Amino acid sequence: MSGHKCSYPWDLQDRYPQDKSVVNKMQQKYWETKQAFIKATGKKEDEHVVASDADLDAKLELFHSIQRTCLDLSKAIVLYQKRICFLSQEENELGKFLRSQGFQDKTRAGKMMQATGKALCFSSQQRLALRNPLCRFHQEVETFRHRAISDTWLTVNRMEQCRTEYRGALLWMKDVSQELDPDLYKQMEKFRKVQTQVRLAKKNFDKLKMDVCQKVDLLGASRCNLLSHMLATYQLAWDQRQGPRNLKVLTKMTCCC
Image 1 (tube, rainbow, N blue to C red):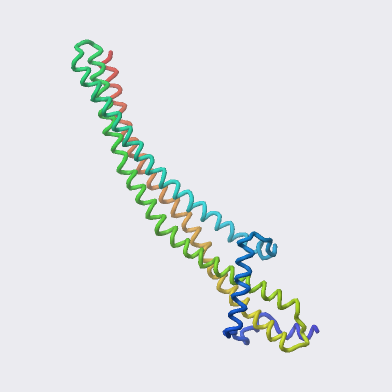
Image 2: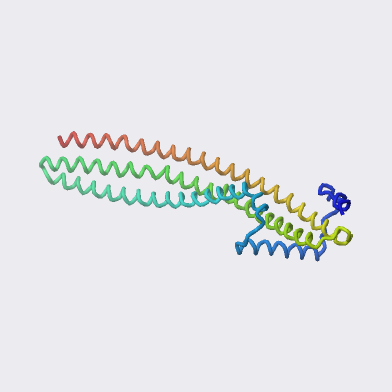
C-alpha cells in the first residue's frame, strides 16, 4: 500500500495532462456548481480551506470598504455643493435686503444694516468660490471609482471564479479519494486526473489571488494620495475665503462702533 502512495508524488503530476473530454468537463462543472451552491446558501466549508484564504478575505474586506466609502464620498460632495449653492443664494438675498433697507434708513442702524449687507453679499460670493475645488474633487473621485476601483473589481470577479473552480476541484478530489483503492489501476488513474485538475485550478487561483492583493494595496495607497491632494486644495480655498470674510467682519464692527 505504502509503495503505491510513494510512486505518485505531487510534483510528478506533469506527466498526466489535463483531461479535456466532454465527460470530464461535465464533472468539473458539476463540482463547480456544487461549490457555488454551498457558498450561496452559506453552508459550512472546510475550515482549513477557508483559513488558507484569510489574508485574501481581509484584502477583499478592505476593497469593499474602499468601494463603499468612495461612493458615499461622491454622494456627500454632490450634496455639499447643493447646500453651498443654496446657502450662498440665501445669504446673497439677505445681504441685498439689508443693503436696500440700510439706504432707506438714515440713522446709525441704517449704516449697520448696509455694512452687514455688504459683508453678507461678499461672503456669498466667497462661498461660491468653494465650488471649483469641490467640482474638481468630485471629478477625481468619480474617475477613481470608474477606473481604479472598476479595474480591481474585474480582477476580483475573475479571482472569485477561479476560487470557485479550485474549491470545486477540491470537493471532487475529496469525493474520489473516499472511494480510492490504490490497488486498482483505473481508480488511481481517475484520482491522478482529478489531482491534475486541482493543481491547475490552484495555479490559476494563486496567480489571481496575488494580483488582487497587490491591486488592493495599490488602490488603498492611491486613495490616500487622492484624498491628501484634493483635501489640501479644498483647505487652501477655504482659508482664502476665511481671510477676506474676517476682514469684512472687522470692517462691519468698525462701522457699527
